[in-house]
Length: 309
Ligand code: CP
Image (cartoon, rainbow, N blue to C red):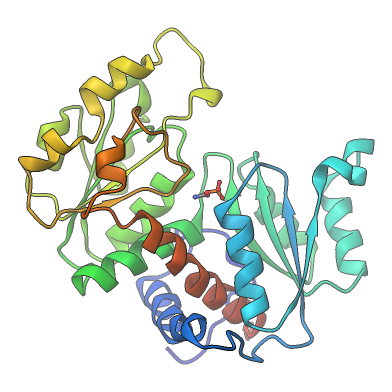
């Protein structure tokens, strides 16, 4: 790829196959940095990265901070609870003030879909989406694909099943965009109430039968049940969900021996996945977390060095 032209990283829908592959290969070159005794390169020395998280996060926020520090950037985490957001300041005004403080890159997590895109339009600073509403979580999908590629060696032709709360999941949406662009065969599986209407148009197969979803799968990406987002009567109860859709060792025994089990975290043990599977030999859950550093280093590096047309 000749040059990276995107000022911001907002989602995988807007990236081409070539651009996604470029992020993954850039991440590959950064992965080794975290194995050094001095885990640092000067790629973003003198740059300032601000983490602006309006929703709770453990993995993504810490991972972006670690990634920025590994690139030698200065990092500031805005504590939303004690910020002027609590006095009614809008997202755009907060962003403009952070930019006035000479931030170069703003990493945003927000409960509203499209919030990072809105910020990106009004700022010169680079904006990276760390998860917006039910819309996209691009760096999560990139680290999921990075992990698959590392484990199996390719994405093209892989059978990947995404199981769980598809309707409320930005992780599912970003994974579907990314995996289908890279030639994987994607199946989504959940109770009817958790599958958005028309999702087939994104190029995925839909099933409500877990055994059908997992049969022949090379990898399964298990999603958390977002009980906090929907308490309607139609929403499945936890025990009922675990019995019908939970990824358990009994189910795993019937599948490909080397099936890869992924989960973006946080996991709910005994709801969407059993502890035995989450901690078992097919699980790459913690490797995904480690790979998040290299992927986020790549994301920060590429947007910061973008050459707009
Ligand atoms: N996977 C993920 O987004 O986790 P956090 O909510 O902890 O950032």
